[in-house]
Image (cartoon, rainbow, N blue to C red):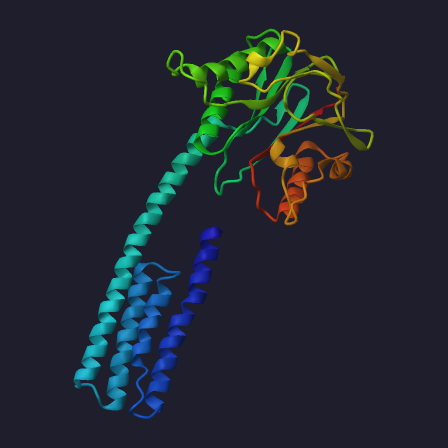
Length: 364
């Protein structure tokens, strides 16, 4: 369908250079002999190159040359040196424009192939969450600040244990390739350990240790620690048979719980340092907090990119004020509403990556 639209738009746009050629021919024949508009024909292939490929550009170039010959015949100047020079210049410019189109088309093919490979790698590293996990219905949303990116410093992942679903949502400090590298590290560490670590504090300590080890393993002995690699995170466990959610908070924003027609943040009390800064934590910091999570209720997990999204006047996105209007929505619909409001608030220009996950416990 997209290819058909593009073909239709090219057919419509090609009328512009054709109309220019016709207009120059008519006017040049009608105006006095000392007025020459033939040099304007060079604009026809130049305009065509802006939206079409080398073949169509070459055809418009040939049409322009034929029009120049027609003008010479109509004016009785077909054998003059002036007309010969005009035709030669027109042929040369048209040929250069076609060569430019060839190089541009080759470059576009290379970029398309590179983009396809990058997207495939990102989808392998960062697949979407499953729609169902035991008695849970889930949906996910990722909005990258960088154009055409599907992964940045924000991440989420899910893993099944024998009797529960474990989830991770995190926001890595920084942007670009370093943030993506640390995000991939956390995803791999979570997937490897989520079903082997019996407790949430143990899993959180494992993720913290993996991030600290990665950022320090190549540092020379005695060298100062200049890299500040860390990530805020939520590690959750949702049992299949119990209407409750257990979580460990590592410097991350509190989830929103939708129920009884309104949204309210979970009242978190114990917050551990972000992952990667575990050396600052005490033994009791990785404490598990538990909250009721009944059938029909929805949890919204999100990263700082949503809270810190600004409008044109610098105002932050009012998540708490908007959330009540989304109560009662299913996970996918709730994220659709969130995305629409967020894009409208920022006019489609996010300053930071934003990720969100919705979880609904289904009735038994």
